[in-house]
Length: 154
Image (cartoon, rainbow, N blue to C red; front, side, top):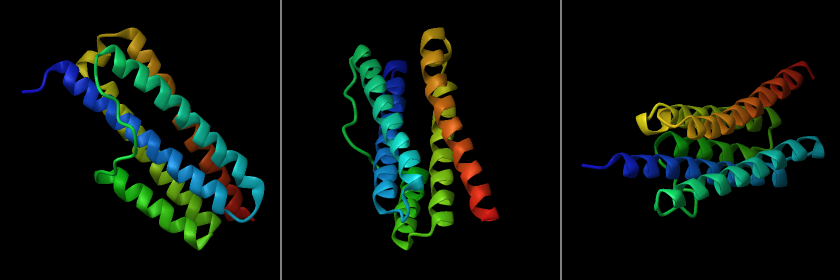
């Protein structure tokens, strides 16, 4: 039976992997999208997740865990980013934004699971740290939704 620390480290590593997946997806989007107006937005997603990985790895080390070093596609994350990367090849802005939305919604669900862990809830500092990352992703998702509305009007 896994200890609470093992469960916490595994959950934090899930978030590391999700953020590596976001990095891969947003890098591909920024590189392959026609028109530079979305490149800055996608690059901000890359930078966001790179910072999140660094912060998460620091916390994993505090718990004497071994941090993930790359994206491991699993379950919903696997499907979300496969869909995202497939949409990039079509270079359809609407499809790319829809895939970004799906990927970030999936990331938020993963954060919600980790934020529900007893070990996380018992630490206000830890809860605050993860909540800030989650809120940043939620803000990015709101930006994606705004871009989707603009695309549908255009």
